[in-house]
Image (cartoon, rainbow, N blue to C red):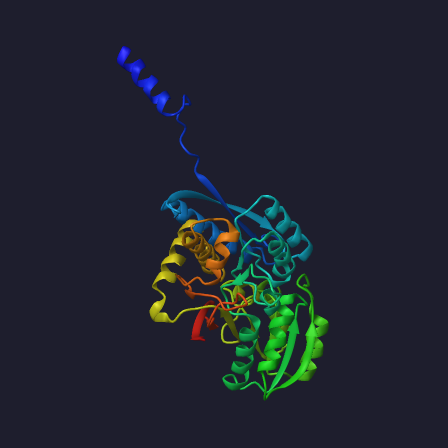
Length: 376
């Protein structure tokens, strides 16, 4: 008994008379914002799920920063694709002292929110916002891991003319930053074809009879839509009902596995492009991720989950290199990061855009999305 008391007394002596307490594990907060309500909710939730999988994987393997294991926590917010709600979500996360932000999903919310993150000095990586404006505001905190609209829309425009032989093209956009941006770049890229109509709708519309009736009178052989799949599906259904037999094209917002169901069938009549992609001979990691995603969430990957996953991984790799989760310390490392993700190599140019961003062109067959080719 005396030996026991002596040992306790010695322990207190060597700790200054204070009891020994284990150091608390550092918490690193990763924010995520997407439209998890509204017409694009299925894509927003998928984006969030991808980020959540990354956080869970990091915690499972005991990820360390400066030699110490940390615990990652995902703080997810819904902006409903609305700029006002997006800035409110951004400020809420800044007030929660997040260490970094993945998102926003849409360009229209990413752009105004980016100023809030910049003022707070917090790194932001979007896995899906493609408007060039997002990274060209002079904010050293803004990054993206997919190609921007300049490349996405321009490539689709060239493909429409050179590969699909389009001569008369009608263009519709949903008036969002993304929709207008990708449609504008598509028009620039479609040199050699005649733009017979430029129409617009909204990202909440459901009746397109007026604009489609006007377009039908112009007899286009191709219709391009700048917007998301929920609206594109209804638009395509109504095109068929009005007897418009033109080919249909869109960017990554349209290019989902859900489009055939939303449109009542897309086989042979839709060509679209996804920002990102790797050749078939390098798809093993992406396929393994897709299988894990389906097992976890009981749904197929649409588009964004792998990119959100890679965004988290690239950000945390920069933290590891900087030996700190403090944005002021890891931001310079993120700007110079070279990370091999499941979606391909990730590094950034001086604006925060991904270097040599890939695009994947898709069509549809038997109700499934079918890869055409990967271009850089």
